[in-house]
Length: 238
Image (cartoon, rainbow, N blue to C red; front, side):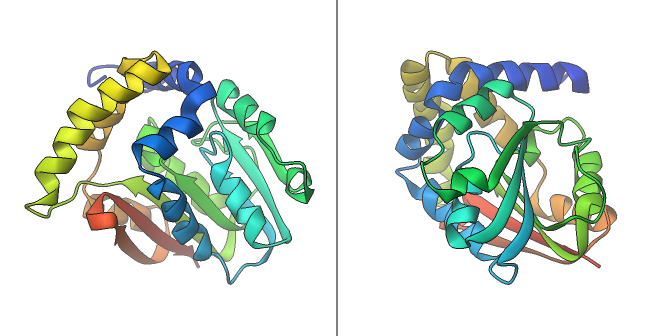
């Protein structure tokens, strides 16, 4: 992937996610020992000061974050955007038979050209999706554009733990165990090899925070979770 163009990367990522879309949620829960649910809960709780109105769930995938956002408030609506149609279809098929299904609006769209006008969302969430953008700074600028003044951006993304005990265990699991097990279940080992390589190649936390600042966000901070395996990056639009 290193020498491929941004468009080639988009197509590669879309193809890989389409291939695993049917078992994506199962694999996430299994391979994270269901800790991914806690990570999403922690992320969405940071929007509790915005209990009503519209939230953008970008790179929404199979809609787990959208479901958590609408579970926490009955007055909240979510525009769920993902560029992989197969992932969106899988998410729609899994929507519960309750009022949340009427408050989640899934659509296919590009995170670098968000299909929404400016200044409409009180919050924007991105779970494990920023890493897959071909142009991260362009995506961040788009997120800033569509937020209302005072609106909050929350990015939940993998990071690399620095603890001397955790780091080698995590690296071995990510590079050896996860692709083998996930490949066996999903039938696409390459998709999870990409996951490992994209985490290794992604920006350091301070670099991503600097890019958020460049895109116009203020009150920027990072909250590491689970020994730094993931981090929540927070920014506010003035």
